[in-house]
Length: 131
Image (cartoon, rainbow, N blue to C red; front, top):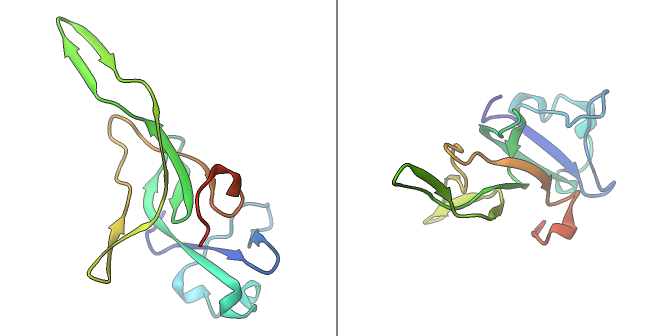
């Protein structure tokens, strides 16, 4: 897992560029021009960068993924532990400040780790934008 890894969505075919086993093909910057699966016009490819994080199941999290985690705080009082129920859903995106990308809108999971449940291209019905 490397923050400089990318995966690629082909906007013409409507599918991710996949490896021989059907999984997402992972690209590194030096592969962009060397790999014949990227022969399409640059405008036809949507590149998604790895966050450098793994979800609760060990899946690499990329820009454009839809993730969820339990929300709420853990309350400890009189030897009882309670959590506020519910789920938080988020599309993984870059955070920008003054036009500069400063990081992603998720952080390492901690007590409530993230789980990848889809992405904006293969799961548009989840209500997240793929723009």
